[in-house]
Image (cartoon, rainbow, N blue to C red):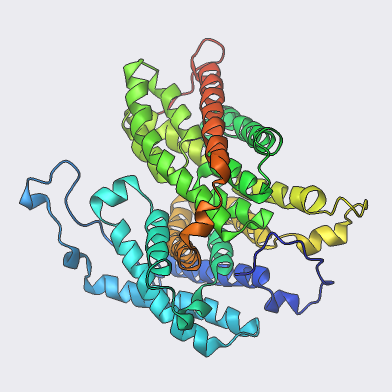
Length: 460
């Protein structure tokens, strides 16, 4: 993968860019998957959902009871194999055609992708183990397995054509856009906006100032990637920010790895602390929703506070997720006009240059979100729209799993450890997360304590 933090003056736009450039191809590929899935669901003619492995192994805390064990082989049913075949066919078609249109050798890519997909299946199976699934996302196992291979037996040359990290990331993000619905704002109104949207930009600005001005971290794409992961929603936000800022793959790996580690600690620790000091479940749920990075971890931690706490936590996180596309848009423009511009030229960056450098996949993300929010949902209803989103969810997960396994296979530990820079990125994350925790709690308490504003009604 080319190091994407190097500033390159872009060529003038050509119409052929629409079917030859990775950013545009990721949009068309994602919308092809979205369209086929939507038609299948809305007509009832077929099921285009991607494969998802059932959880297997021992339930956490129930290791002594053999009856609680679900064997690994039991998850490989006939329907799972059929879905795996469908998932492989869909992704292989989109990415192989994309490679061909870019001028790369489609045959070599398809051979490499077949083996690569099998490796990612191992990642998805590992992450479906009950205890692993409870605490760590598939991104962790994808990075770990990829790093283990690249730092021991080495990544074989014939597999490298399939390591298209950015292509997978951009396609997955556009598919993710379809799941970001503005109707979620209505469910918690101005309370959710105040907690999710009021805090997020402040935390990003604070962490940028802390990283660049105070800690003086030279790697600015790493700073903004960590800031987005901390303030918005962990893995997905880090992916979008890294692509928008043109960060290196090691920057993204470091930001996501750090976020996942602290997500586990916060997922376990925050419900315990909230109960210990008797914080109201609604305030506690909003606090969790606004600070815990992973959506899945938010749901688990919120449910530990009861139904109301769980619902509030999930709503705040869903409202916060809407910001992903707009945060990426802001980062892309900021880096193009301020950070990446040579200080020596003394010239302003024109609109044309901003457009050329601008990562077009962000337009796909926002378009998918708008279509599903303002066309699909009003036309076909919430239930049918949610069915389409459910069918698409695993395609996004597969695309991201491909991306993180690819990062691991392209990275050595020396490169990854080089991001530490004397521990400054860790300091940035920890101080930023503490600031995030304090500010989010203050806003959540002010809005939901009932002393200033009426407490919203949430059905238990």
